[in-house]
Image (cartoon, rainbow, N blue to C red):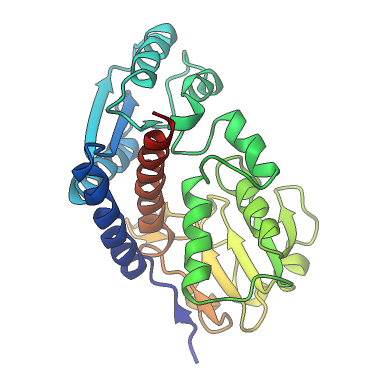
Length: 285
């Protein structure tokens, strides 16, 4: 029997309705949640992501600001603009779309965003706080993955979880969130020996490598929950994940489709973080 689908589109719709309702309450009190999105350059994938984020804000009634800059923008100019947004009371979240042009250091930019407006959860202060179990904001993609697990009431405590991919954006924070929920966690990377040995032992398998279909059905434990963070475009134009869905779906108990799994959840959790930033700002003013 094929695995049951972890439908990120359906769950996103449910969560966005809740976010819109809470946002309306905040707005009625004079505190409309606001998100500023900055994009530098003409990266086509980034342009799509940014449009989706701005539209999502509009759909739930948030205030959104989209700022586009040329590929030649200087680092100091960008940092100055971030400083202005940090001081703007109408903006509760600031997101700088990655990647950035080579003349701009991403770490300098991410660390320039005020931690209380770091709705991506990438600031070093938030990353450090995540290590201690008390982040200001959870990074959006791992947060979305946790919501998917929560939606099926999966018993994370005591489960064996394997994260394939060790990036600062997904892999590492994903491992921390699973650990905080009581899972026994293994992080695999490009140097891991006998990857299949680890993945076949996983009750929960999270894959975020950017390599199309690298995890096949014979690398998965029967009945496992498989969450595929990857999204790759094949030569024929079709999209696929980092998991070979066609073979994995006959082994896994639950699996995310690509597209329609983790992707919608990432933007939804960005909205949630922006809403929470607005709500927190009301308590500090």
